[in-house]
Length: 98
Figure 1: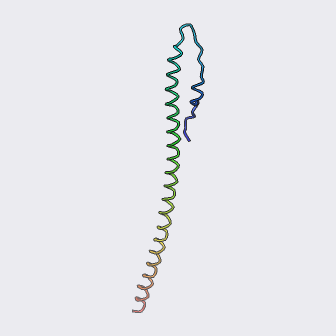
Figure 2: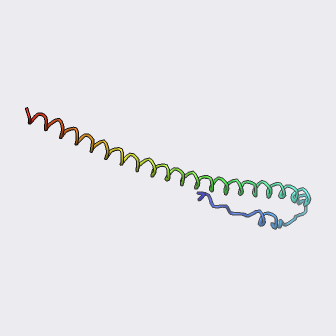
């Protein structure tokens, strides 16, 4: 549903190994930072999924609401036209009697 494709999963981030050089990063700091990223990433993914479900629910409600609104209006329109037709018959039949 999203327009941007998610490229990494939390598991892929967790399992990512980086090469170390002579002046490489502190492995513990990198691991701790990646742990924070993974938690945020998973939280964002859960929020996206929840919002997508909510969006679908609202779309269904909107469609149902439109359907309910259309049907009564059609019946009301028919009833109004029928009454108008009966009124015209009554009015014009009285005029012809005169």
